[in-house]
Amino acid sequence: MELEEEHLYTLDEMRQFFGLTKEQWNKKNNRNKLLAHFSNYYEYEIRYNNNDRRKRDFYIFKKIKDYEEYKKPKSEKIQKRDTIFENEIVDIVTEDNIQTSANINRIIRIDNDFVRDNYKDGTSYEYVRLRMLKYFGNKKNQGGTKGYIARKVWCKLDIDHNCYIPLSQEVLEEFYNLLGTKLNSDERKKEIAEICSSYENDLITKEERDNELGYSNYMCYEEAKNQFYNKYGFHPVCVPQYEFSAWSMIDEQKEQ
Image (tube, rainbow, N blue to C red; front, top):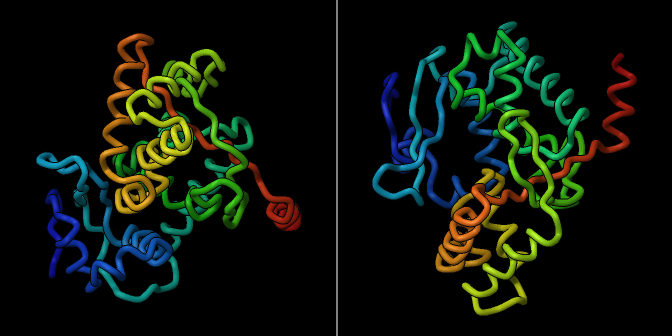
């Protein structure tokens, strides 16, 4: 199967391209490694399906070179790209560790001419997303190659300054109350809200979200979130607070 530039492919078509079953694709670690490898050969982004926003499609912007199943030694261009994205991510998280991949991508595209001039917004976001999962994991205290998620903080996005402002306890409790009313239960409302926001931040997949809470609970969350927006004018976002691991910092000092 040959992928065409400026063409949209369904998830089933991409699994066919990779030669994977649904079960193989759903193994998250394998999937993330495969997509990182795939990004060496195609510039792409993942988009919501126009007919069903629960599904996501792959849009191919550009073919870089012929796809090869097994990894080859990185070219000088790929090494440069990886170094730039790694350095930018580390610098941004060091300065402000309450972040999402989307916000990190925004900052990189503002500050780095090379990224802005050479990569589509969706492509650079995917590079950031995959690296954040590799560096820090997707759940609290899980950990990655550079650190871990210490906690998750409910915030408001300050788009003018590309940062997240933590919500006051009073405002947060009002959101929880809206969610509790919709779910008719207070026991899991905080956990459910965090799972839903993790899905929206691309930390987990739709399948993982539905396995943990079910689609109906997600729709209750969406309704509560929209009611909150009608009153406050913004959607609350549960944002990871990242911490670097001690061994990661030691390794970086050795390299300097």
